[in-house]
Image 1 (cartoon, rainbow, N blue to C red):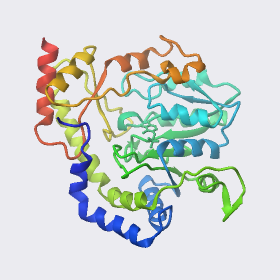
Image 2 (image 1 turned 90 degrees about the horizontal axis):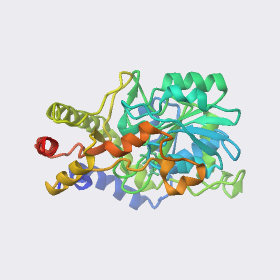
Image 3 (image 1 turned 90 degrees about the vertical axis):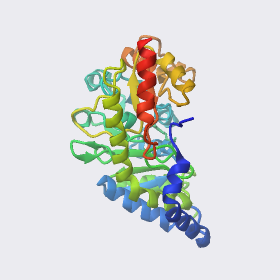
Image 4 (image 1 turned 60 degrees about the vertical axis):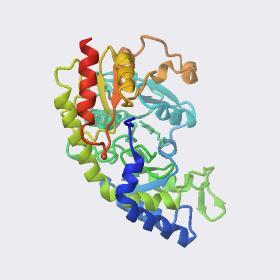
Length: 366
Ligand SMILES: *Cc1c(COP(=O)(O)O)cnc(C)c1O
């Protein structure tokens, strides 16, 4: 089977560097935070063009702490999209705030900016756009709305390490930016990890404290906090991998260009690159109303493909108490029914896009 991502192939390509880095941590005896994590924070902040980065245990904890640092809590509303991985919404709910959904735009499947103004109420505290599949939501108008209404803009950049918006890397454009280092992400740890980037030193300090039991000094707890620290091994692994990320994102873009060319006139809609930015293709998502038939045909041909995401969050049983129903967000619901993601990763073997295109052509012609 051709997988959706091949982490063994990636490890093989950087084995020596990784082994040295991991063995160094084992020998150091320091396994939580420590110098490797601190160095990674500095390097990742530089990569994003921010003055601060605080490493945490996952993308979910990054979102949770970013929202807490921004003062989001019970009684507040946070505007986000229903067409995302469920963690975006879960993190909002961890704070006690209520998620308020707006639909996505149909081209890049990112937040429909035109709907945000109408969703703002006196209780609104923050806006959380998601840079879905590896490309930025339209941040400038969201920034303007946030300033006008005194709201915090928190970017969910979990799928978009290295993507640019108007020439600047995502994550550092809002008040706070959150990344995931789940193994399959464009920059993935060998385990769980996440980070918050920001130019606000007060927010950064709050997150540093919150990730480690609200300590201000050892065993003095200024605030209630969490055990959301990053492992030292993940810091060491991520330092190695960050050096390869630009080349890996370039490889993803080259593969996407090949798919774009081969899938022309086959009946699927290929991804739209929004004019305001660059795409890092965490996922290559095509659209067709015969999505399920195509999913089956690819499986039969030995090629995994994915549903990202088959059920929008407003229709998930876990979040039924928010009162969502079928028809509330028609663009998200249509995307959930028609989107299929096909294998894209830097080590994708030559010839796979040709195989995928052949199956698409055959299936949709039938
Ligand atoms: C992966 C992801 C998250 C959560 O990150 P974890 O590291 O898995 O906790 C949040 N939002 C989006 C859009 C994601 O893709």
